[in-house]
Length: 337
Length: 203
Image (cartoon, rainbow over all chains, first blue to last red):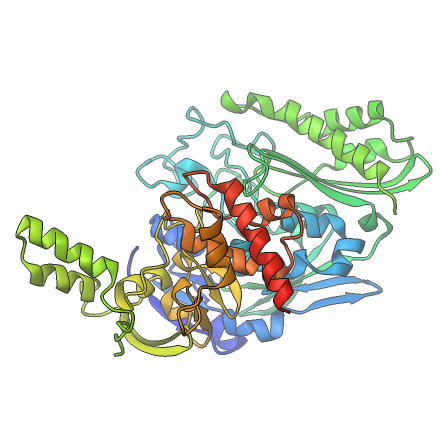
C-alpha cells in the first residue's frame, strides 16, 4: 500500500473541504473518502487505488444513517450499513427487492461494515482491473487498452459495453434502486442536489476510468425510494456460481403491479451482465397491458438482451440473463401481496 | 505504549520464533526485534492512536497504513485473529467492533479508535472458563487444522446473537463469510447449534 495521510472528518463541512480532490472514481484521484472501507482498503492494498489522502467520513454516521419510512416512500441514509437495511422488518415487507438485494450480497461481516453509499459506488471485480501487473486496463490506466477483451472474460458484461471496457458492475443494491426509480441526495462543495440513482454511473464512452457523475468532492448522503404499488410485489433473483457469498453472474430486480394477470406496471433492473446498474425499459414496455404468461415474459427477456455484445467466454450470458428475467417475473407474479 | 499482553505467559509465536532461532542458530535478537516492531520502515507517515481491545486501552504509534489485524497481531501480540487472504474474502480475521462482527484486515487501525474491539482472546471468562461457542467447537471437532477457527468462533458468536442461527440453512448462509479449507462445515454447524441452545438456556 502506498503511504497516505489520514483525516477523520469531524463534520460535513470538513469532509467536503478535505474531499475536494476525490474525483469521479479515478484510481489516481489524490483523495478518497473512507466509510466502510471494504472496497477502498482492498483496492489500496492491490495498488489499484492510490490516494495520497484518505478522508474518514464515519463521524457523519450520526447524521446520515437514518432509515425513514413515510407515506411518500423510503429515505435511507447513505452511511447506514447494508445489514441495518437488510434486516429491517418494514423494508423486508414493503420493499422486498431492496432487502433481498442486500441480504444476498457479500457476507455478514462485510454487510456490517459496508455502507449504502459505498456499496453503490463499489468497483468492478474485473481481474485485469484488480491486478496492476496487467498493463492494459483503460479503467485503471486511461488509454492503455483492455486485457479482458480477448482474455478470460467469463464474468464480464454484455450490456452497455464498448470497445474500451467490458467490466461488469458487481453490485446488487444499486440494481434494485434503479428498478424502483430511486434518487440519490448529494452534498458537495457547491451545495446539495438530487439526481436519479440511474444517472450516478457513467457508461464507458471510451473513458471508463471516469466511473460516476459525482462532482469532485461530492458525497451521497441518502437515497429516496418512492412509495409505489410495485414495490410490494418485488424480488431480487441472483444467479451465481455458488449459493452464498458470491457476486452475480446474472441477476434481476423485478417489481410489478398486476390487475389479475394483466401487467399494469413493470420494473426490471439487471445486474451481473451489464457495465452499470441496468434498467430494461424495452422489456418493461412490452409487458404493460398484457397478461403475464411465460411466453410474454420470454418476449420481454428477448427485448432486454437484444443489444447484448459477447466476447467469447461470456457468450452464455445473454441466455442466462433471459432465463433469469423470465424466472424473476414468474416468481413475482406468484407472490402473495 | 502498553505492550504487556503477557499475563497468559509466553505466546506460541514467541516459542516458535525461539525454536526456529535455536535450530538455525540465527541471531535471536533479530527474531525478537521483528516481533516487536516490524513497521519501523517509515520515519514519517505514522499515527498516534488508542485502541480499546478486550476492555483495555492500548496506546500505539503505528504506520498509518497498518490494518487493525496487523495492529492486533504484530503490535499487541494478540495473534488469535488470523491473516488468511488479507482481502476480506476468507473471514479468518473476524473480530467484533461494538459487538458486531467485522473484518479486521479491511479496517485501518487508525480508523478503529473510539470503539470497543473484541478478539478471540477476550472471549473466555477471566477464570479461563471457555465461552460456550469455544467449548462447542471442541466438543464437535469443528475444525481440522484450526487456522480459520478463531474467525469462525467470533463469527458464530455474533451469528447466534443476531438471531441468524435458527436453522441449519440459516447458519450456513450467515456463516458463509468464513471459509474453511478443511471443510469442517458440518461440524461447525453442529457446534453452533449446541452453543445456540446453551446460550438460550442461560437467558
